[in-house]
Length: 347
Image (tube, rainbow, N blue to C red):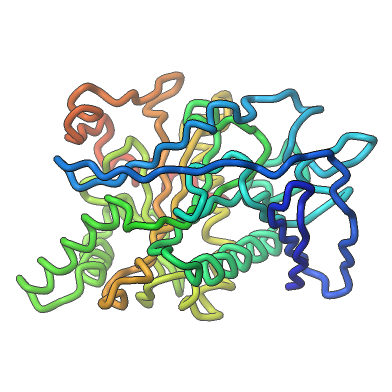
């Protein structure tokens, strides 16, 4: 992997990741941009303990532009974008409309391909490996920034999810606090250790392997299953079999096998509802241990992949009990979801 660091016209950092060591990146951003002035504010909810980012500058962010005005496509044919080069493999840059900024974290955009019409599932295994390298490199860099407690890499697809740019991309958030879902996991890790003397993630994976009914696929280094108490209609958790706290700790064998496993999961998601259904909207989220956690080795790195589509032509909208109280009700039995995901395996 070759890494080339550049600067956009307004001072934001941009990084190219290329598979070939001989790739040269020299294009300069010619746009007459003024420096981005954005400052997020973190407010603490006294009732729940949650932190809430207030970022009013994001109201002006780009929203579903036409293909010929996509800011994530490369700059070519006289059209200038966020990426000055005429082509790229993987590129990461600071978000122009960040939710976290001004010394309270950082938000970055990750573009997986310069092909505007492609999705992640269309990538080659070699490109997925490069994306994994980029996620890992940015995790290392962002975790070293002052005040950063957790690094979160994720990908969204589909307007149903809330995606505002259709070009295949994801984001990386460097949180100045531990996200609520991770904090809840952290509490359960400690409770489980106190109750059993064992690691929570190890026991969850062992239970799913022993039961087998919710396992979607299993390889030498990875296991994917629908969780026993899945929140979403079709939800899969992907764990390395050797527990590690973050992407930095993944060994070479697991990294090599990841591309094949992840692409297979994404392609199965697109086949859940049949060939006539549009691409399945989804969120794909890496859960890593907070870097400020003294007991972070107890955490289990894993990826959570889920869709809000519950049936052909039907979406799961959060009900009042779910949005208002966080009390989830699933429309699909997890065992049925797992069976369907096994049925649509690649031949």
